[in-house]
Length: 150
Image (cartoon, rainbow, N blue to C red; front, side):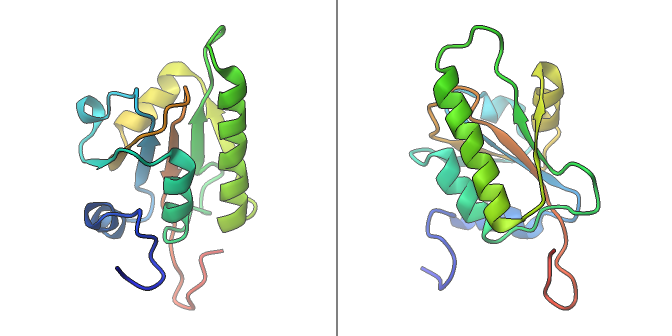
C-alpha cells in the first residue's frame, strides 16, 4: 500500500503509467474486448469496473492539453442491447474526466476508427466491465515544472 495511490492500481499498471510519455495513449476496455489479441502491452484488471479504474488512473495521469482531442469512447452500433446502460456508463466517463481534467471532452468515435485507436495504444487495460461498449482511450499529457498539468 502507498499513500495517495488507489490500491486498484496494480504494480504492473503503475509501471505502465510511469513508462508512458507525452502523447502515448492507454485504453481501458470491457470484459468482452479481445485485449490480449490487440495489445502491445496488456494489464489485467479483471473484477474491476471501468469507472473505478478510470477514476484511479486519472488521479495520477494528466490528459494531453496540447491536442484538441485526448479522450475517446466508442459509439454503440445500431440495435445494440443495453444502450441505456451504455449511455449511463459514457456519462460516467464525462463526469470523471471533468472531475480530474476540466475542459477535456470525451469524443465519440465510430467502429473501426475507435478500434484502430485501441490497437495503436501504448497499453490496454483489460477490465471486468460488463456493460457493452465499456471502453475508453486516453492520451497522456505533461506535468509542467511548476507541478501543474492544466
